[in-house]
Structures are given as C-alpha cells and as structure tokens.
Image (cartoon, rainbow, N blue to C red; front, side):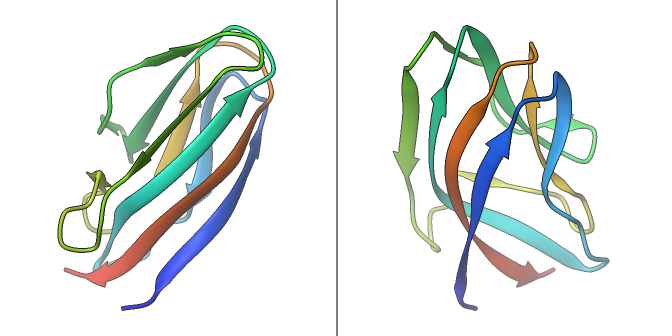
Length: 103
C-alpha cells in the first residue's frame, strides 16, 4: 500500500470530492495541511458521514495534522468518496496524503 498525495484546491461551498470512492476500497488519511483565503469552516466527510469535526479557519490561517498508516487520522467507509466540506465559498488550498486500502 503506497501512500498517495492529492492537491487540495477548492472554493465551492458544500461538498468537494478529493478522492473518488472505489467499491471495496477505503481511504486512510495519514496527513493533511490546509490554508484558507477567508473565514470558513472545514470538515471531512466519508460519503455522507462526517469523519471530522468542523475546523474553523480565518483569512490566511491553516490547519495541519500527521498520523501514520498504522494510526490514520481519518478513515472512509469502503466505497465512499473522501470529501472536504466548506461552510462558505472560500478558497482552501493545501495537500492531503492517504493510503488506499482494500476492505
């Protein structure tokens, strides 16, 4: 299981898919770093289930966290999209690393 990294560059209010789900696969998030261009709440979602709380950010502020393959920060349900949800139409950029695991 290789670690994969996706660029985060979203600005749409609501759900923004970062990784499209594949049947029988789940995604284990091992790290992320995000910076907001304005005031916005950010959370991660697996399909339609919240997998993080809302992280409030203000202009030019950020949030980052690091886990590991053995102890991931977040995990989707098998087959679900990994989604970042924004409370407002504010640009959020950064990156996210994950492991694609077969359930």
